Amino acid sequence: MNIDDVFVRDEFRGQRLGEKLMFAARDLCKEKGVDRLRWEVQQDNDKAIKFYQRLGAKVNIKGVCKWGIE
Image (cartoon, rainbow, N blue to C red; front, top):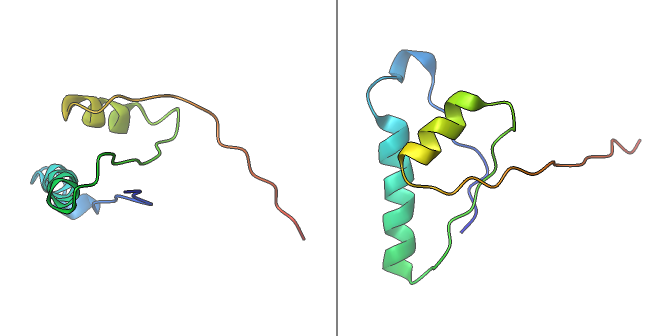
């Protein structure tokens, strides 16, 4: 399963909603027999990286390349 974006607005932070969302996604994978949950995080987003590591995720840092084609 791939997650595109996880975002908790400032006024809702500190209520463990991000944690609940991630664990709900994990539980859905288990329920459906999916063996991998994948998402991306910016390399310089130290706060998010620490959050994901605290949840037990393995963080593989890699660059994402983009072309803006007009």
